Image 1 (cartoon, rainbow, N blue to C red):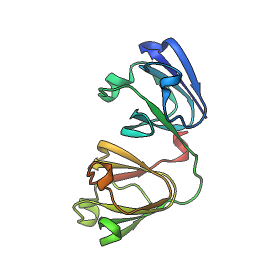
Image 2 (cartoon, rainbow, N blue to C red):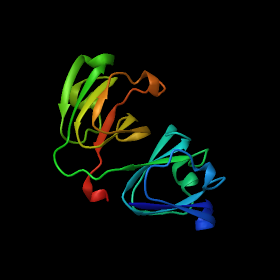
Image 3 (cartoon, rainbow, N blue to C red):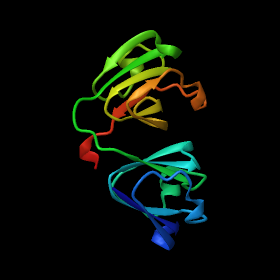
Length: 173
């Protein structure tokens, strides 16, 4: 997996090739305004140490990603998303600490309100696969990347309440 970052729009200026997670670009370049994802899927963050807003990038060219995604800050860190082959399973919970209504999912859901009559999701347990969760129905608004693990509370994520989610499929690589 590889992504090349460029200081300026349209793949101009100094560049930096990245083949794994990078917590802070500042030692490689002062800014980043375009990138080429040669292979793999990546989460990009507008703050160092995988903090701030998250953006999903897959193979392709992003000559001016800030305009494309409506970003106000440029990318400061990135995380490679490992390819997953196999089943996808996640339990979502209405409240923190795995409380309230619980539903087990194995496929994409464009609206938990429409499918489950659940107004929002505030904790989850990802058993299999890698997922993107969105703050609004129909995969809109801010997104967050979830890998296998237990997520007891979303309050440390800026109070996000997720309303749709989709699997990161191997066909995206």
